[in-house]
Length: 591
Image (spheres, rainbow, N blue to C red):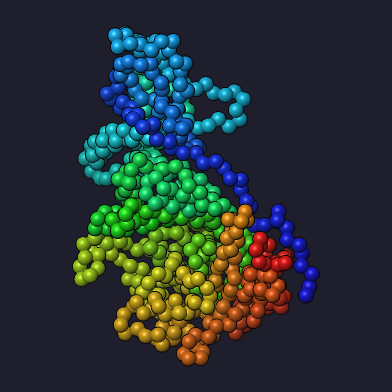
């Protein structure tokens, strides 16, 4: 056994980030009411001042928080109070009045010191001041009123120009109306309280309204955080997130009620640009893509509360060299997979959820010659090969959900991936890539691999590489009663050349990290015993050496094809691959 380099924790490809404290929306204290909306403020103010209006797009980097510990916005003296605009930022309680007024006491005037909450003064020594907090109720009220005015203006604009208003114009008009609304609200607050909100507070409120109207509301700060991989919502007040190399942790609510959460999901469905999608009694499930390529799956009606799962692909634009840097593969496997793509081998990438199948598929697609014409088929766009720029001719196709009404047992208007494949074959494509095979579409996909020029790829959910063949057969049986195990096995043996299995070892609960890596590369060599596809383990783990990652085992039967595509067969001679040391694990691995 050759010497192995000692594992270097500093060289690990998945750096452990510090556990940042989560900012949050905090709800008003019990019994607290929302602020007075800007049109009906108690004291109408003059025209907005320049300091109260922020022109052009603005973006607050922080999340929005409410009063800490349920602290009310202000502590007024006892007795009847003048009408005022509620303050959306937390305020320290003023000093208590020297005497509590009795029933006949006079009410302090709005301008008196005891009636004025004091805006917190910025700390000149603070290197990172906390972002201003926003009352969600005030933001929602402004959002409703801006939406009504925006609808009126867009309707007039549509009539005047004779066509629908584009998305950019809607957002531009909306931004202007939001700034005007916040300026009026801020001026009314200053008139009634004697203290004007700061520019930063105006910006925070503007962004909260903008997120509610055009983006994901109180979910948006989590969507904007690139370190968050998963957002899990089990009702409006049971929200969990997972960061890179950190376990799940609970965060504050993203809505005040389940009804508000469902309304947010319906807004996101309406903003989705890929066909009709909805969430209601007739359509209790919702799957869509969000801005930035994140994927959302939601359920309601069939569950006691609305449930949502949002996943982020952190490696949005990767190559096989990037996969080497991340520790997913070593340079030997990267060279092998690159040659397989150039040699037009049909590849199926397998693994469980969240292990990095799509990222690896995207990296392998970067090895396709740039002038080839390819097609991608997905239920929701996740590969984004048509936007990355490497491939000059990509035909992206996205499945379409039905509208709830069923005709012949199928939702009206639905188009599945399986139904798109025949049309894709008439688009003069050299390769077809399916983002994820989930059901009966596996049969037309296997037929594409069998009849086409080769070089097609897809992903498939499977717990282990030894389960892949049976998993394919199970999905084939969903195609129709005429499908049999024997036919499914024959289709698999004729269509698939290589199976690449991606695994993950999660040690975050032990203070470690998530290790994602290719554990097996298996070659399908035709039909074997009992009519099942025969598999040859080209790369696999070596438990005797404490190495769970894939290292060379047996040369493939297609080695000559790979050599013609530029692969160096000598790389398969090393029993350890190109890894510098066995994978460093807290439990198992090298001793």
